[in-house]
Image (cartoon, rainbow, N blue to C red; front, top):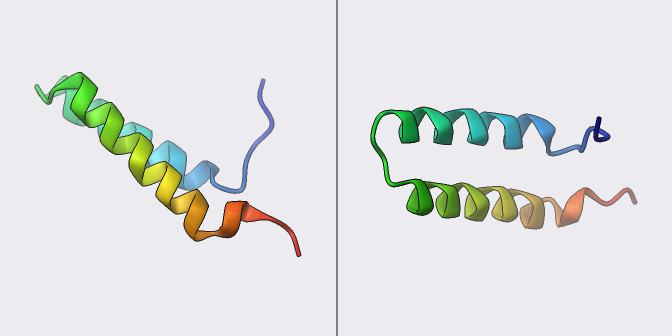
Amino acid sequence: MRPETPAYNFISTEFRKTIGDIMNGADVDTWLDKAVNHIDGNIQGADGYRKN
């Protein structure tokens, strides 16, 4: 198992939404790229979830 990240809730929600969209016919590459961009943006917006 991988250690849980502070971004886990965001990542799992984004993943669940993306998989649902793909199962309903969305383009796989486009939607996976979109999910990665959202997740990266969340992590960057939280300054990498660094502890101060």
